[in-house]
Length: 363
Ligand code: SAH
Ligand code: SF4
Image (cartoon, rainbow, N blue to C red; front, side):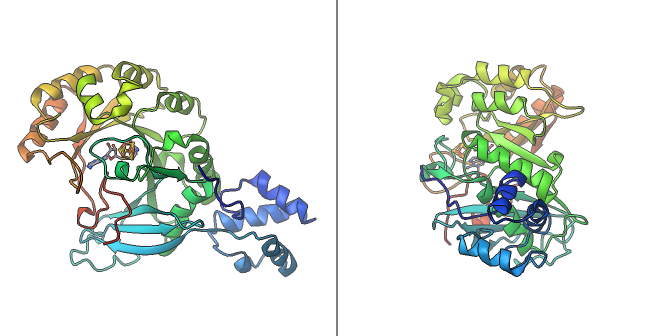
């Protein structure tokens, strides 16, 4: 896989910025000014950092350095207020990032752009790789294959590009981040966690407002369990037993349900935290009452909740959406067994922005 462009400041931590300041014979407080401009202030060009001497700015640029926020190539707006961003990276690759406003004004209903204050809270869904190698059979991203990992700067840059486009003031407005876009975050572990730390320490997101979803990469889960600062955990369960799971998620042949549920049981939860299990309902495959009962047994003893997602359909997928009645029955069986279960409302299906629909669609 290509390594990302080394010319971006976005994604560098304070130590790395200090080294750059040193190389330019600048005192350490210049590194602090750089850090402040790049992260909390989200300035997107070196020339606009007015706290830095003009000469220092010029010599950074002479070295080929820029802040390197990725560009917004195109925006697709849904009738429900969701916006899918096609984001262009410095090497020409593209990824998708989704903005989902919630609240009274979030859904304009007529497809017009939600105005700056038309939402109470919002969620940004961020990609971690260009494409994905995991090959889940119900996911459109899988059809792209894996192109490359995103750098920490490219992961943060999706967030800052969307925040700047939406003119968000994080001190006044509440935004959550979900790492549920294109790619498997735990197969790009180092860059993903570096991005998390910089989002927390720099951009100003508490880790409690972030959730990462994994398809069940066990070594990643074990590392993640040791992190002192980490997002909340969601696991894509998607099946009630190994037979079905191996059919829809080939990764199950490497790490089966016994290993996955063992890792989930061992996972050290914070006070009042729960693991989220995601479960994509596929008609006639995993949506029967018997399957719900098997899921109850699987998660027994784990402090968790279950997010049910009706399949978001797409070309090239061999599965169909479940019947509404099946979804409701499934939810009722889980909740009556004492397991909180929610049906995730699809967002931006009309613009291919919903779960599993991110595949760089241009229309
Ligand atoms: N790669 C990670 C995170 C991104 S996918 C993971 O798989 O967990 C985010 C969620 O979308 C996952 O729970 C996945 O199971 C779900 N998903 C994938 N394709 C989908 C589809 N076509 N319809 C509904 N949900 C889907
Ligand atoms: Fe990759 Fe997640 Fe899609 Fe599976 S569901 S192919 S892990 S992005």
